[in-house]
Image (cartoon, rainbow, N blue to C red):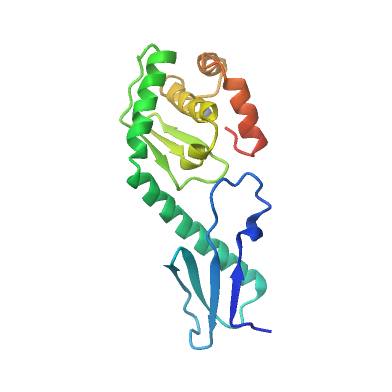
Length: 189
Ligand SMILES: [Zn+2]
């Protein structure tokens, strides 16, 4: 009943058709000695997950999801740092500000985040003027990425999604197309 090792392959999450990130494999190592200890570590690009024996299939799969989420977010964070991605985002935001807002917007920080819930593409905090863009956007078409940046920038001026807001965002010509794209993959504002 308890095979000592079991590989969960990326196929498990194949239902997420639009999942744009490479999934990490999870190897479950079940141990009698680890009565209540659950731990995970990365070994050669895979996750080794140590679980006590006797967990139900559902419990195990919950731990697999937990481990994947944790390590994948970590890896993405590292990739973002190594590639100076936030600097490029800042630069792009300035270009879009110039082009669609006559350069009149200002913000304290704009950067990518790996932390957001899968449905959220960006958050603008109008109080401290910081913008967080989901790093998932990096793997999407540029017009979608730029739409999200424009959308969040527009919130600096108009916090709520009213007619004024959409009038501003519609200055970006591919707004409708980008919104359709995001809706189709289950990310929406
Ligand atoms: Zn919004």
